Image 1 (spheres, rainbow, N blue to C red):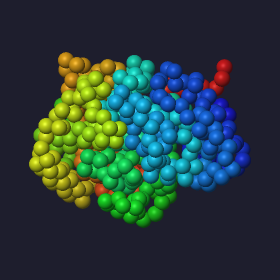
Image 2: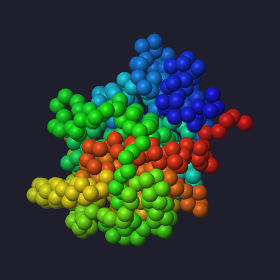
Image 3: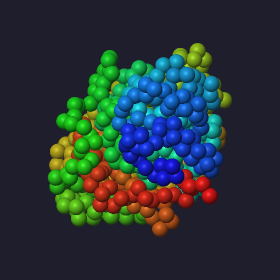
Amino acid sequence: MDDLAWIDGLGQAALVRSREVRPIDLVEAAIGRIEQVNPSLNAVVTSLYDLARAAAERPDLPDGPFTGVPFLLKDLGAALAGVRQTSGSRFLADHVPSVDAELVVRLRSAGVLFVGMTNAPEFGILGTTEPDLFGPTRNPWDLDRSVGGSSGGSAAAVAAGLVPMAHANDGGGSIRIPASCCGVFGLKPTRARNSLAPSAGDLMSGLVAEHAVTRSVRDSAALLDATAGPAVGDPYWAPPVAGPFLAEVEREPEPLRVAFSTASPFGGPVHADCVRAVEDAAALCADLGHRVEEAAPDVDPERMAGVFDVLWTVGIATELAAWARAIGRDPGQADVEPLTWAMYRAGRARSGVDYLLSVEDMQRITRRVARFHLTYDVWLTPTVSTPPPPLGYISSTPDEPMRGYERDTLFCPFTPVQNVTGQPAMSVPLWWNDEGLPVGVHFAGRFGDEATLFRLAGQLERARPWADRRPPVSARAPG
């Protein structure tokens, strides 16, 4: 049982199918690990132990690819009926959804057992997980460092061996940023690959995507196989796929045309460790037979920054307005953090014309990047501009409410591009620096083409396995 912490989700489900373990055994082992490690990390903010135990003992447990496997939901996004979901905010500290999200329905059908909910920054705004409501999540590789965000609690929990995979979502890099900071695999799917039903058709004009962070590539692929596809009434959906993503992981890719670049799309410095990580990954790709050259899409950084700023501030204002309508009370300044309040006010000040002009600019950028991918199969960059920063660095104060957002823009310049374009992209844990901190590298693929990314990720995982890397703070055998 002590080895379960480091077996991936498909491996744990195989043990259940072979009757070597029972679902309740997996649940109790996961609970034990959470109780052991979470006090140091603060990754899990709501425990669902009794719910998981009851589900594990049910005779009609769904027969899916992950039957009996413990799973964590992020405290933001996919709602679980009857369980508090706060979005990391005092404003929603007592909010309990009454309806399951479609993603939760599909995860349950895949057989996972929900054992808890993970920490997230307020409304997922920042690339660090330090909400006032629950306090910071600490990085298992260095407790004084950030785990990234906004899916930082999920990434820390997977990295530390609490569970093999956990729910995550991504509006500007929130799957990929914490995957880089915590040394796990994180793929943002194509826009609308996973449905946002029933609460939304899309969010922020399509910036937001739902999926997970995982230890193994195959878990990410199998999980996406289980959850992908439109729900009734969705306004649009991703292109159909040729076959299961899981099958792609074991398939050797044809030689790919790989572009790489290390300069920030928004301008600003990039740490030498992040540059070295990309150069190392480019060399590895070349060794594996891919054609690698330095290139990047021709995108105006000021236009890109302006588009994202309008979509993000209006999106946050809309999110708060939607919650106000749902709970019957408008937010006040004391209900939210200083940055959230500043962004709420900025978003409310934008006009409808401002927003729709930004959507038009977003679509022009998308066409430009799509033309770049007519030449290149994947685009390789750093995931973030520095190794995991110290806790407190990406933060705001009442006197400087926008400071956290400004620092976050410098920290996370690479990932928002694919939220604007809707393309799939992944952070792959191929490199650790001299301090022992993970520094992920970022691969973006063509719209609708997760298959190529999964083939490449599987090849990279075989060439340079990362599963045996365990952070200093992680699940350990008793004694």
